[in-house]
Length: 168
Image (tube, rainbow, N blue to C red):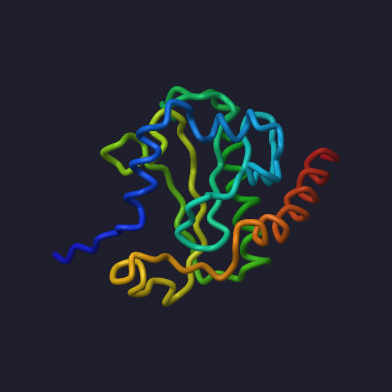
């Protein structure tokens, strides 16, 4: 079996484990969605850009309630989370045209969770050949656009989706 390292994650993981405050709760407390990169607010969950993305437009869907245990969450909250994942996939397919997606949760530190006490779902667009040598050799992660550009590109589509949901 071959093992690959991901050294660019070290700085992030160290910083997160030193933080006294949850980064997801902190994003909500800002009350400035653009500054926090929050794209959408639902009834139980919100969608935001990952500030340390694996690929451009890497999203996270998190509940408002600070809760580590997905299985203890209310059905309404987890149902909405899945609905928001479907909306995210639809918008990302249209706007970024990825070849595929990774979606999932890292529940617990041993599973790779950078935010251990607040469960969340990752939606990560993928393109054939999007992995390269830079993170391994150069300890540098390349992205095709900055977070502000991604936010400006996606925000109108999530707001349009919000209006559609409100009408129904």
